[in-house]
Image (tube, one colour):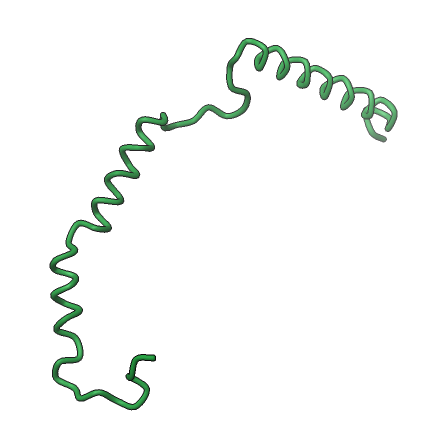
Amino acid sequence: MAWCSDPCRREISSWTSRRISAARERIEAEGKAWGRPRRLTEVDCSKIAALKTADFFGNVPGALALLNQLGRDEPPRSGDELE
């Protein structure tokens, strides 16, 4: 036999839901964020994005030189023409 009947479970669930809703409204009214705190700040995120961008575009001259070398040894094949 269960320790709590079905109506009792619904009442507990409803009470918990009201409590959480009230806490959320109170926190948001204070201007604070609700939910799991961020591990990284906005400044950290922008620094990471800048580093990833620099890493991605970092060796453009080397990449262009590699692309220019590709296919020099082979003659054009059918289907290589530009449209």
